[in-house]
Amino acid sequence: MGRKQSLSEPVRRKKLKKQRMDEHFAQMVKIAEERKSRIKFTLKDAIDLRQNNWVPRKEQTGPKKIDEVRQDFHQGATDKTVFAKSASTSKK
Image (cartoon, rainbow, N blue to C red):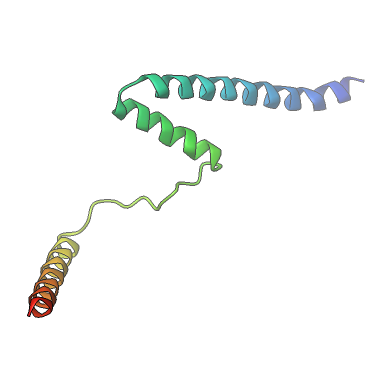
């Protein structure tokens, strides 16, 4: 009989922990609805993560290297040049 009790105890604890987490996240939902945008969106991000089994919606990226910033800048300048040329030829 002691063995059954010890096996069900971890299951009972796990359910209790999940219930407490559910309560905490329910409270976070209420707070997110009442607060300013920065707090609101931080809480909503945490809520979304939990609903998605802690898998982020998009890949977290760190800061760009200076070469990547330069490449993006040059690509943006090239895109603007191409757009300006196509706009001027379509007006004629």
